[in-house]
Length: 486
Image (tube, rainbow, N blue to C red; front, side, top):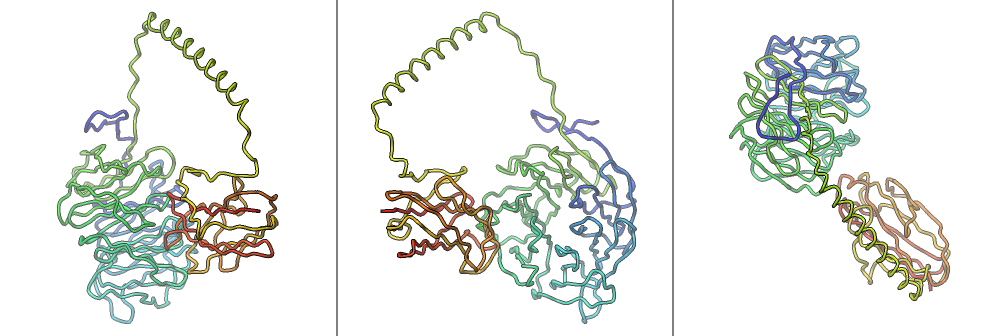
């Protein structure tokens, strides 16, 4: 194993294994959703399927032009390869049989504009693809003679890249300086993320779907908050203007890897943009990068030198500490003194508390923080409700666009509606409280849906009085309402 050194690190990045077999340069690397395989695409059109031990499973041959993108379906049993000649080929990973090939244009003749990406629908029934002629198309996978359809057209602007969101509910693709999000159930574009004036040429999501990394044609990488559609970090990728590379986050989202810096591959701290490691081992253009699944750091890099390398961390041996017997003895004395002082303090506090009247257990205080998130203060004009009867019925629903909001509703410390996707029909919960009770209802957001923030409508009634409120929560703050039973 060859250590690659950029600067002193706690762990050293080392070459674990090389995968040889390509007769042309490596353009892209995609890992299957199951983590069992990964596939590599070459500059002369061949696609090779590997297992993670380094065994070559099979080779798929399509066009003689370069492979621009590879996609797996959810099961990992199908693979789609996009080519620089306007077609997508779909094969079985288990048998090697071809399902179909599809022309980029529909009823407009066959042109040589590149397909820049393809993606399967979540059920594997359809393939989406787009590229240089500015059309987003959709075709049936299992009907090779069926016509594809054009879903969207973007004038003279090409579709540069695309992929499914990590939850596989939506399709994300880029046009000029904008990432567009399409609902694959309706094929409608429901959200857009615009970043400055730069042209986005590739992007990737964190594993939790909360952030995107964008490669811009001005040579910079930008990190974007997906929910708020807001840039939170930007830094120079090292490749210069008009450079290009695929990117990938490590499975713990701590690191971001990119190529495009001539023959080098860089590993960045995803939170700060600091360059942590630089791999200088390749001897050809390196733009193909990805991570294998699992908790361990396993990174793949591919290059025009026809080689694929697997990298991992190797811990440096710890230097034995010198033992100072006198210091250890003094530390034991100091620890004993601290324990005695703490014991005395606890006894004094216990004596003080005997003279303090206990709080009314029926009055609950609104917390300042809940599950690591700030709790917003109560708006006394809209978020405070008073009832004369303690037998309450609480209903929760979404009266706007159903965008997949998932919430939990807490009453005091108890979850009364847990991990629930809001619907148009209210979900009902009945609770009972004693007279004199003061409590709170908290909305905890598990996601932001497709339209942030996470918004829920609540109505509370005691059979006599009814109050309706709207609570809005994000991944950083939780909204709360106050209930008083007289």
